Length: 197
Image (cartoon, rainbow, N blue to C red):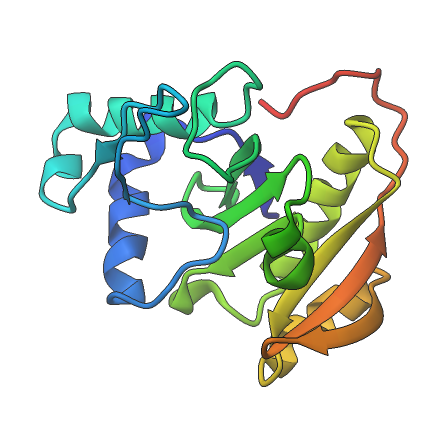
């Protein structure tokens, strides 16, 4: 069964194999590999490459960047918000995809991006992994105090629309080629502040 986990260096081989499967396609929920510095906010910037991430130390640095993104005190580019990056893994610790939870909405995110973005590697699609990961992320959002989140998808992405509706998403409208759904978060019996491992 798929589960969401914090990024971790032990998934290096599987993560890179999935990256190759995507073959340059955009991956919602995975974050950028390059961000220029922003002196106005103190953000130092970063740049990762496929070749560089083959090195264990560089992959650990990549993981640290992803995990730090959720901390309010972490410097970030102007217009960016704290974001929890999560990886979707299977029973055998295989990386299946990424899902991210933005902690708040900017005007741009309200129009198009929403709180949550996700992508599943091509070889792992149509097995319910996106639905499972989205439900687990809705639990995490609830634990963070959110009552509902905005999730968007491309107008022509019927599979993603079905996934969002499966977890309770209510269609509001479409803007700039994106279908916009408000989804109630899921209450859990975990203590407040519980985190994903």
